Image (cartoon, rainbow, N blue to C red; front, side, top):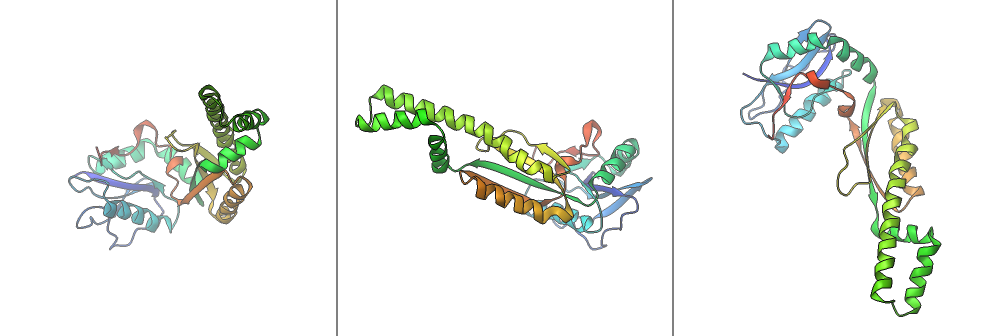
Length: 251
């Protein structure tokens, strides 16, 4: 049977509770595979695994349980290897890398910050900071709204100003929070977000990081800043080309 991989720990990491259940219905018993100085937290992989809420929560619960006792390199949901020996083989092959990552991530958590513009607020913001836009808008107003061409010109100028503000604010978010983080990982661009950045933060500094996000919101009310965390440090595992499991769920 295929092996589902939740995460990688040091071989000295305390074992998981005997009754801990993982993905699947009924939940597959979670167990530990050891290889040298490393271990993998695994279970049998159920047939037809898909990213359903119950299984997503089970994956998170296993990582939370294991992470409460020490550092865990989390695998993404749906990480499945052909069998146990494939998992231990990769642990042996990439032992130096995983030991370095465990040392680097000890005592740290991930926070993901996404930011977008509050539509009305950013329009006021760009108008306030651009005399040319204000003058054109005022001229149009005095002309009863302006001609079609004048309205089009104003709309294009406002759109360009907002676009430039997006690029400026994306840098602002990262620059404001990066000094509080041990590492930063910029996420893939996605529609609707001007910034999508993950920060690796010392667990003891988590409250200060959350306060810095609050301060960022207060200082820049045209920004809608969303904080998600603390999370297992998914963005900082850096599994590379020989990660211990193939992402199969949801394919």
